[in-house]
Figure 1 (cartoon, rainbow, N blue to C red):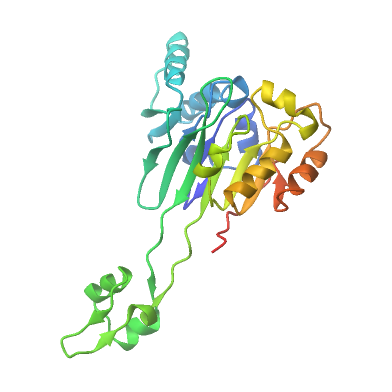
Figure 2 (figure 1 turned 90 degrees about the vertical axis):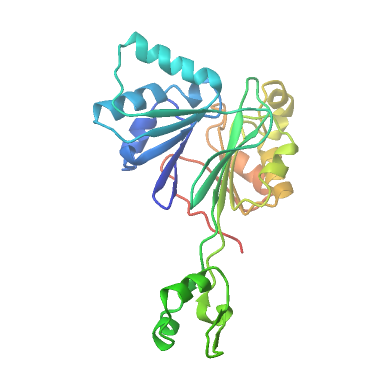
Length: 283
């Protein structure tokens, strides 16, 4: 779950998602975007129940759903079988594994998809915060009696030249805006160097790390990644921070995988239920 200026984006929706959302006191009805990476059950079996819960709770606001084309057919079949009458619009946006694409964009954020290599069609996702306008310093507004048109010019990064020849410089009158932040979600995938090009420079990268590198052959065969490879991906892509997850149940915990990933990329943490991370820009 990623919150960008109170816009809530949910990436994948396995079984138990509703339980986790309630446990962490996430306001589910404010989720307006759900992105499904692929159609293996652990990534979408919780979606049908969540869509039904929205209906039972009286949702009327539209929901945007992004995922493989077949997902729309599965939802339609499930709703038809149960004779469900949905009380809110569901806008489905089919993803593609041909090339990166922009799925959603507004004034503050852009959602993108990119292909990864798994046994079935699968995509990763990127959230990019839009650059904010500079803020005009209050003292300058008061001291120079800045007019609305002048304030708008300064926010556009322009100097203001008055008719009497007075120059109000943008660089002195405005606060520099904070750098925009970015988050990438690389779901189930075999190690593929091309992904580094698409997630390059993001502030926070989630990447699967199913196996230790001693099981590299198993990872390759099942289209998964080792912890060492996840660390290499983060280093090659020059990301700010790495989160590893999707760890095989054969391991008692993430300790050894975390150690392995950190041997290549030190700023690595392991995903766990309830973990909250602030996406911080490195600029």
